Length: 499
Image 1 (cartoon, helix red, strand yellow):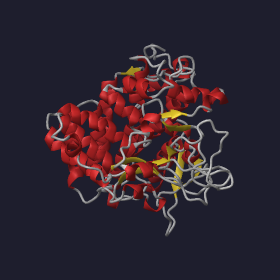
Image 2 (cartoon, rainbow, N blue to C red; image 1 turned 60 degrees about the vertical axis):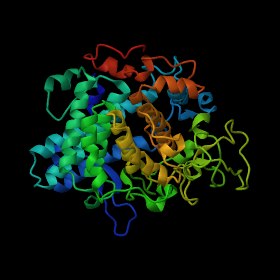
Image 3 (cartoon, rainbow, N blue to C red; image 1 turned 180 degrees about the horizontal axis):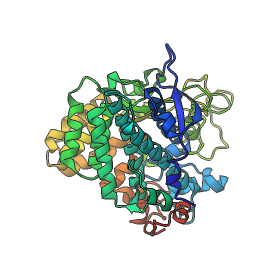
Image 4 (cartoon, one colour; image 1 turned 120 degrees about the horizontal axis):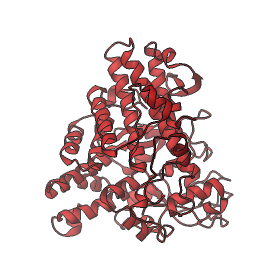
């Protein structure tokens, strides 16, 4: 039995593009076909279709309960009380919030699925890079397509190295021995080197956001992700260098109104750098609204209460009174019963608690078939990262305008006004810990932020009651390598600590 991630070189999924005149979303995913890489990447149209298939793999990963990774198991998010009672798979999902020592193990189906899907996307990106590089597609299209493929590979590897540490790292370079017998774990530092190389290439070769089809990545998204990766590994000079161009471009800016970010008619907006695309087409909807329980299943009214995940009590109460605009767009505290009348579905144990409102869709769509897009990167994140970079290099005063841009959009006072003086470096650090939660709650970055700051275990134990008695350091700074991979890939000789 070969290593699971190697199989994806040979199981090749392709989706073709359908651009419909007047369609709200320009990148459409339509039925799959199974072709060899030689067939797919034989010409420009096939190459574009092959890259689109990789986007679809990330779309699939982000559209269901797997989108909760990065949110739950932190001071920001947790699973609801009901989830562990469903048993089996759902008990394993709840363990990513509670860090249950039995269920969060190498045999977790949730962890394995995430590993598998990410390596499938990475494997197909490797194939695309290999065959497009050697193919006949003319410039500048070839460089653009390679930029997309390398951005997508970097995104996959960034998730993998953060969650699992040292990981197998197949690339586009053929290696018959490793493809037959499996890849060993590559040190995380080397994985980050590949990621930054990919993103630098993407930054240099992708067109500006305004010149790319909506739903495809672009120069500004690559710059933002490159800055985030450098920030993660605490390479502050290169993080600043990557983010600098985003502060002086007409391609992106903050939306005027925070709440407008979460209206479906404003998808792919000026603040959005890259978002996962969903449509009303069967198989390409998402069910995040249902997972977050902010719609009533019986009446399709806002605020059913309960379901799979919700903010922690700490997160639900993090907004001060003045920060009502962000709070009102982020959290729902008004609910309706099954008949659409004000009230609660009282059989939910978590009924009445605040739920995440950001992903609510129009009332004519079922909560498990939403066409709402999901953000990956937006400009507010860039501003907060830039403030962090400056602060960590001793430029605290210079960092203030960037955090204050985000605060002013939320109609709250500048940070120095609230503190009463120019903040110290530590005060600004502490402010970024809360500011990023208030701005980016349940947008997928909290686990990564806390880990970068060295606060994942400390703050989760403090503010997530389900995890308080279970979290251990360094064990829970990583997920376990899946048991299936350990058995299939004989070149992986060690498990992550504590598992």
